[in-house]
Length: 235
Length: 295
Image (cartoon, chains in turn green, blue):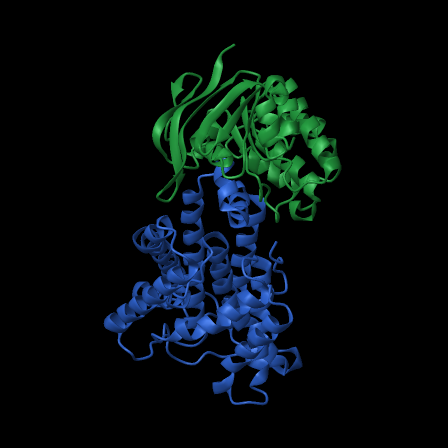
């Protein structure tokens, strides 16, 4: 397998404050990788740093083995990486189909074909393409956010807590959808508050504590690990 | 009464051009641009500078020189807006200045622009064309000068063009997306700085056009745009800040109400009406007629 994303010793944060103190991770082609850890461990910060939304003060980023340190989001998108923010991840005053058009903004052609593929994956969106995103329920909104990020057919999808603030029923649907997306060959790097679900879903997982790598193993092993269970899975 | 409504619609269409620009800039950059009125003034005076008299377009008081002058004013103010953004607003944005700082900066810019107009053209009133124009009679006892019809037609056409741009083009969709959520627009690969440039080009040229039309409707004065700021803000807020059709509806509401009020009160007090409308809407529906509630 070849490596899509490699982060090496990343130091980053907001303003003058460092949140990440040298974090490293790898995502292989076709893999689901999850990052779990306590609140404030820097999980979302790591994702933003990997997508060029935050400046790296130290460390480097490689995409397909090529230097990608310091690339802005617009460039990351062109290199086959998409990002779904945790909240406010759709354009509320735009319709469903307009949101998807924005997802494909930099694509030159093939919009219709891609739209059909995406509608195939998210049939609920195809039913009412002209409804404004602001009128959708939380779960549907999250589906649209995933669909928007997939419009460019990325190789790697970064998901920032996709199940946060959803009803337990919707959480299952979204995780199911994430598995479907991965089955189609898209590698996924997911940051989750629902650590148990995330570990069950992923191939490999990283535990982040205080902005540093604490553990790294297969999802199953982390799920079975006594230490992880005690610290992060509530018993 | 009917005549006041017609005049109100004409003035309303001028307010609409300014208010749509104001609301677009607010939508994308999230600050109230207090210099918008003075951009109108500058546009009017640039057209005055560029205007060559001679000839008549049909029954209008001016010739083809006015069309050229309007285009020159629109281009000048549009580019000036981009330059001002680069020199003033963008550096502030990059430092995460809050909206009060940006609004104050725009107030300073308003004073600078007005001072330039005072320096170059003085405090006296100017006219594009002097002389009296024959008004045409219309049903219900309304009288309308050809120039006023020109103002109405140009304003309506421009609004239609802006709508086509916003709702039928890729750039327009990107502008609306950026207004909705600039971070998400960037994440989607949209070059938001590019969108900002287009927003200023459109807002600036509409302001200049509004200024020239206002000059044609009455006359040129250094305070003309600043005095117009209140109706502009009323219209934009009335309709819901950030909403182009809100600005449109707000503009006609303010324009017609102001003119109608002169039936009962002295015209000198008509700006009060814009204020009253503003208060009323803020009390009853703070997000404006078409504004979205904060999520």
